[in-house]
Image 1 (cartoon, one colour):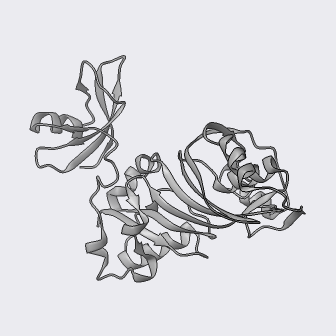
Image 2: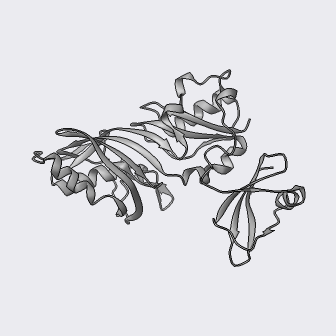
Image 3: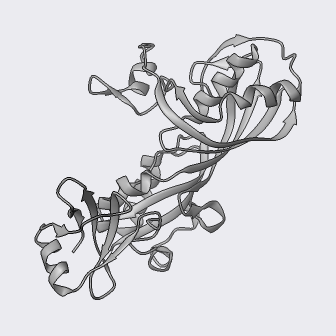
Length: 286
């Protein structure tokens, strides 16, 4: 069984828990997700089955959209409501001050990942070290905030809608906003509204996933890959790609493309080499 599921993950489950449920329903082991959601978070979790697991890296490269509920005045160890409170300060800021502070977080910024994250250091996840009370220095990472809007203001609470590059930590964004305002802040609720082409309004609640419903819920292998241009190959070129051979191309407008065989099925993901002027197969699916 090959395809992609757009799931609405409930609160309280890890992404791994959700994948385990899909494995149980589908009765197959080749299942993975394309972008972690914390247990606190709900919303779009893209799950890949069968050959689609080979496409996860391309799906994860898509922009993400979130709705974040943030409480000012309280900072926590994890930057969200699951952590221990480390500081409490009075909230004496106006909506205008919040709007002004948000301006500094739009566009390309550097962001320090939270300790409670799945990043690895020395072969161990940061959240594993955090559970042992160990905190290590984390280097800032470049991310991009495409849009950042204040959609609700009921002090000390506010709601943000964020569209951002992959790898952005909304918890860090809330924490840094609290620091900029001088009162601290943490995330109290988080919903992933979209991951690339996959949107929450189209997502299937995980509780409604059954063996009977799974086949109709599965999306094709190329779902969510529309940001990559398509190459339509004849039989000779398709045969070469199946053998891992490069295809000559004098130029290309993109560095990655989808390749389709004569039958119209997704055959491979291709990478363009400007130096060699070829399309090189990177992930062959058939």
